[in-house]
Each structure stands twice: as C-alpha cells, then as structure tokens.
Image (cartoon, rainbow, N blue to C red; front, side):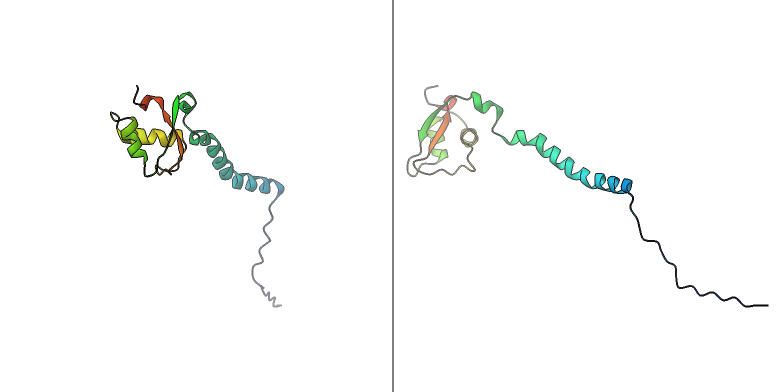
Length: 117
C-alpha cells in the first residue's frame, strides 16, 4: 500500500471580478441618491424665491431715519394693523435678512399699510 499525503496551503479565494454589467449596476445604484437630491432641490428651489404675489404688490418708498426701527415704522404707517404682520411684509418685500434696518436705508412699504388707506 502506498501512502498519499496532501498538504493544503489553505483555501485560495479567487479575486473578486466585477463584470461590465456589474459596474453599470453599481454606478447606477451609487448615483441614484445624488440624482434624487438634485431633482428635489430643483423642484423646491422655486419656492425659495420671493413670493409669487410680490410682483403684483404696489408700494411706496420710505427712508429710515436715525434711531428708527421697523417696529416704530409700523406704528407710524399702520397704527391699526398688527405690527408683526407689517414688519414681516416689509422684510419679505425688501428681501431683508432680518428686521434690523440702518438709518438712510430706503424701504418699500406695501400701499395697503399707508396711513391714507
């Protein structure tokens, strides 16, 4: 009888090979979330613009005096209106980052708030 001995050097795994079809699938799956985010940003981007009604608003222009704020302007221009509404409308119409204003700044005021109406 003869003896056969075999020595195993361990299991050799073949190197992972990605076929052309696999690369296409992997690229598509990887790019899908990016494309989805871009599409959603494009669809919602129009809402970030000034309000749709802003183009149809009639306004008068006032110049901010030293020490004057939008809240004081609200009391002067629209004493019978909630000053929060007035300030928000002026901020929106003028695309201001906040309600803080500087002396000499010219602001558009919707004519619905002027004291004559």
